[in-house]
Image 1 (cartoon, rainbow, N blue to C red):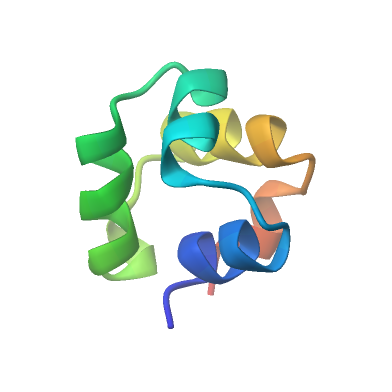
Image 2 (cartoon, rainbow, N blue to C red):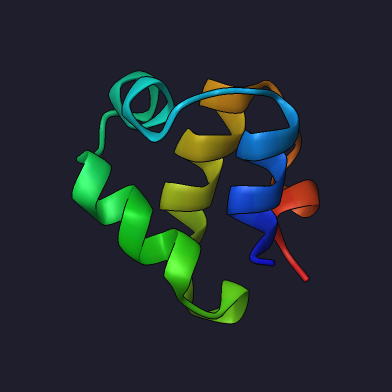
Length: 61
């Protein structure tokens, strides 16, 4: 499982809520959860990490 999705699921947060807090679309988050972790932009990972209250390192392989 992708680490972005695993973290979001563990925190019991919806894609909609995380995307809104991160300032990205739900569709973009969905695509990120389906993609390889190594292909995510650092700036986007930082937004997601802040929205979920985790470190960027927790969202990377």
